[in-house]
Length: 108
Image 1 (cartoon, rainbow, N blue to C red):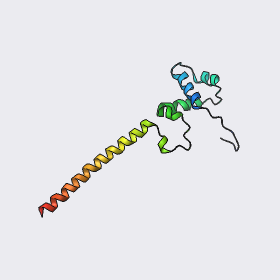
Image 2 (tube, rainbow, N blue to C red):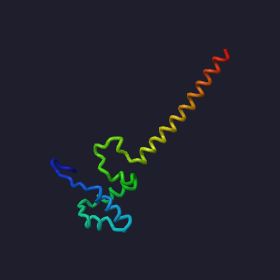
Image 3 (cartoon, rainbow, N blue to C red):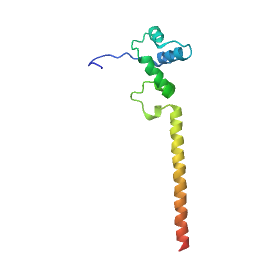
Image 4 (cartoon, rainbow, N blue to C red):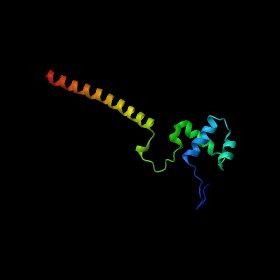
C-alpha cells in the first residue's frame, strides 16, 4: 500500500519496449530482465507483459490524463466501424418506417 509522500519509480516507454523485446525475442526471464534494467518491483514485468498482450504497445503508454483523441489508431478504427454498422441498421429501419408511412397515406 502506498504511504503518504511515497515516491514511485516510473519507467520510460523505451525501457518498457526493450524489456518486452528481451522477453519475447531474446527469451530472457523476468528476473534477468529486472536485474539488467534495474527494475526493483518483481511483478512489474508481469504487468507490462499482460498490458502488452491485451493492448499492444498502446498498453505500455502512461495513460493518465489521456483524452479520447490519443486512443490507439486500431481501437479508433474499430469504434468507427461499430458506429458505421449501427448507423446502417438505423438507416434501414428509418427507410422501412418511411415506406410504411407512404404506403398508408397512398392507401387512403
